[in-house]
Image 1 (spheres, rainbow, N blue to C red):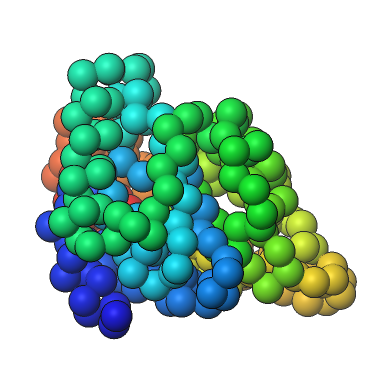
Image 2: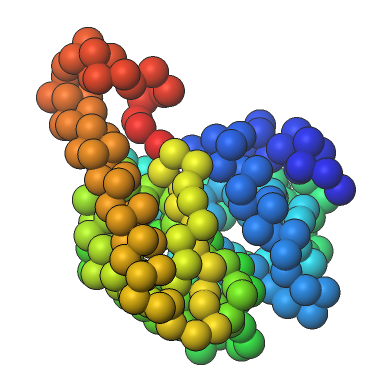
Length: 244
């Protein structure tokens, strides 16, 4: 199935993934071997899961659906919202025709590692955006990505917690090759051997070049929270209620 078909099925589903970001996910999913799998951390209502399951033979979605970490400023658990998200997630998978390719592990990512055997040929991280959980996801789940596999992280250079976790666990590591980003969705490839010093420095420089954009995004978010959308627009914010 083509990306056009995948996006046509996923676009009506509530979520923050843009078409450009969905294309990057789809292309990564298409690299998964026939006996491989994608692991997604944070599924919400299934927009990204549908895209991934269209390109890959198997997707494992890790999401507790507790009604927490659903979006900006939504941290506390809300069982009613969580139950609604759970039901809607599975209904959306069925509607998109990909339910048979998706396994849902309803658990916190920090508690689910032993429930997902085998490598994650593509890892998509869009879980809790606070520094501690984000760092844990990048380290523990990132270790499941084999050489040549991909890790994609949403809200990279857009969330303070995620960006700090990336700087500590990924940016300065010689074990990941930076591929690029589609706005706040960044992609890395696991290296088979550590990068040579010159190549490593070049990769670090390329990643750090996104930090001014990160500062702009943090400023936009602060202005939105302060009720100053006009000033946010002055910084170029046009794409919906939050910069993604």
